[in-house]
Length: 189
Image (cartoon, rainbow, N blue to C red; front, top):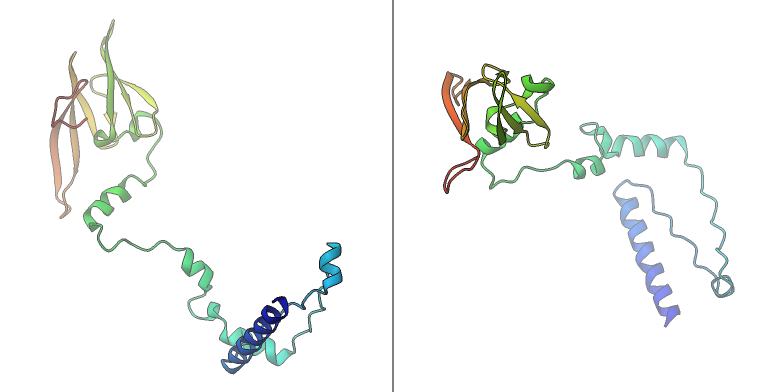
């Protein structure tokens, strides 16, 4: 049975080598079959020495390589993610907005991504405890400037923000956003 498999494998490798040679590619080298004694002993068989390629073969391989077209190999092209054709392009733009380099601290907080964790009454007024999507905690006071807005008012049940941004056409838009600690059904946090 093993001899049949070996013969079939040799035939397939020979056919593949002639096909690839006909297409202008160098023939693939097949590993030499291991003798039965080497397999039984468990020692690896020696690898055959590779034949050095001539200058003409190197030049021919370089001109037909996939890297010549576009400068990227097919392996690199296969690794690049492809866009989902059923995903909305508008939601993709919103997700791309989160990837920008935001400044550190309170100045890098976006109103739409904040989560209100708590509100504390301190000696200098009310303090809102908020967290961003990376689970970092910040303490906000009234009047603090954020990346896309500012804190207007802090009450015991929520925080009011003044958000500035641009609509789909690039027109500046300002709006008031209220976020509550305990959101009710249908309300976003």
